[in-house]
Length: 209
Image (cartoon, rainbow, N blue to C red; front, side, top):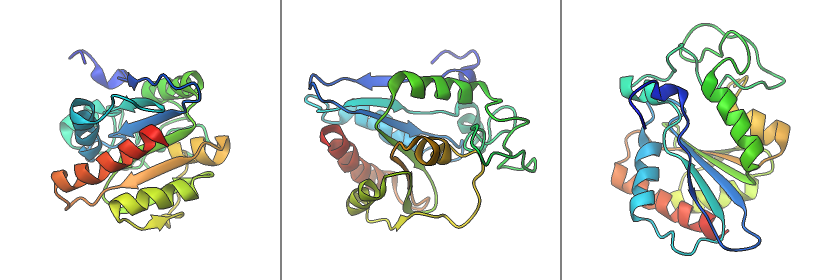
């Protein structure tokens, strides 16, 4: 990534398959800057994972929120939570705190780029990597996927996190577009080696699912 305004650019790394019935699977790290685990596991998998004969097309975004990650904060350079900025039916302008949804839906360049990317890639499965709730959350028709992922990481499957998430990526993709969308929430206190071991199994499985 260039050093100039990296927070306005999405880096997508594709690992293609030769299979005629390959699915498009999108995997995203670091929606929130203080949740760096996703970038670590994606980059390590790209370097060391078994990608020689994948059945599916894998699209990796190691870090969606570079500005926030560099500063260890949840929001982006405009103080917006990138997981509350999507033009969903339930979007509202929220309080200007760490969950601030922006002045209007899709106000952020990265959100606009993600919307365009979804139209281009047309993913059939989406996995986003978060922390620290230690669970497998899902939106849309993804319960069976969530249960399988839970077997690899030994986290409970939770359909409802128990608090409102207006403008969330999961609502935009899973609920309103019917794309199976999984939010894997890591345990903040878990060692990165343990997190990677679990996630490597999940990535391997998605590659041939």
